Image (cartoon, rainbow, N blue to C red; front, side, top):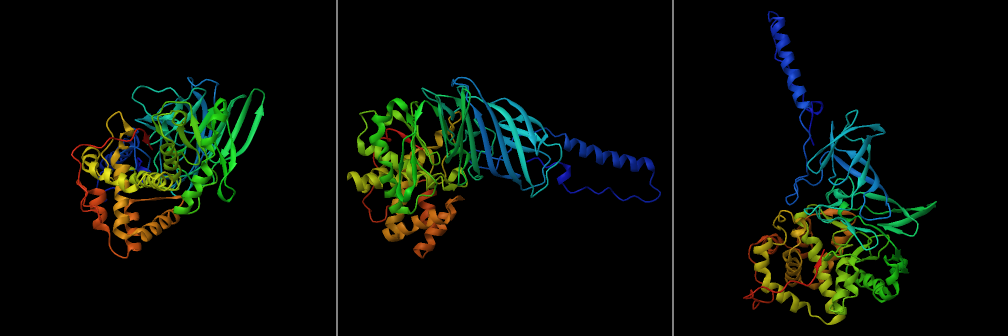
Length: 507
């Protein structure tokens, strides 16, 4: 955030004796005023919260409390949507300007607390100058009227996903600001309301629970609200000619899925598995953390699945491609489900902590395959150990991934944060024993529910539960260039050649 003269200490003018000339006083005053004018006229610039991997994501100076996102779908997915994004935020500094992340759409107007505000672009930021400066500790409302364009250039990734009959979202890791203005960093979670207007015949579904569907003439406006805070990268909006099957999960949890209407019957056997999968996860780590769950099966080619909060995104073809065995598909479903605890409810404070998401999701994916399909966890971990050094060399150690390849921002999702991180969890279980490890997992998701957490937080909790300092153990397993010896398996060695990577990317 640019701190303009208003929020800087005033510079006292030099003392002068009574004999000093009026001209000297005038010159000193003019010089001070000139400095202030130059500072006030400093050009807008992109800001960030200092993330090591995405330095220009997020913005300092405020904390978002809620987003209200209104989208009007024109009935075709190759034209921009009309949109209004309303942000309620608490200021954490005195602000002459504030930056929002927004880089793919036309901004028509901006208001701050109901008054027109000036705005311009700087890098991937929308820089807003309110009519009156904002004071620290105040609640402010920013309203941006803009377009949201689902068509991207060749160097842009994520954001809207164009499906065969509409749209879905895939905002991980840094693409929510290609859809709507926001503070696009996982450290700033907020409540969300979605209002999606689409022609009759389309169905719109978003994160959270439905709060009404109002039909007016040829269009319907669908409203959804979250009951728990959410990171921007986990937002999901599906617009299509969809069916929304509903069922009940554990403890009466409402489960709703979103599938192409024409495929509902064929996909039902897969959809019916979700309640038991939720019950299985609850047996491992405790009560499901949100107000609803379901899977969105999109007719689109993404090459990945995604844990968007309460409504995980899957390619429909995953469930219809005969090459994938049933146990594998089910384990991938559990991978995304487990993210609701690890990554969505407990969110990494920085992208360097992403192993806490993917390592745990891979762990429960493998554990589910072991317990339900007799695919031994030890075999998978031994294979991962053999490839671990090469993964670390190529992508960095689990808790310090290398920056993304230019033009390929999702390239941080490398094997070292998936099976490489799950391998570190396996080593931890070997080190402290199964009972302590399982207790750690339950306490971790309970203590950090609806919040953000870091690798250091995990190390502290693991050490407390183990009753001894594990910082050296974690330093080697999470940050070392080479993979340490596996506790209990001194015979495990690095393989002579790289292990094959999994056939699909799980995010």
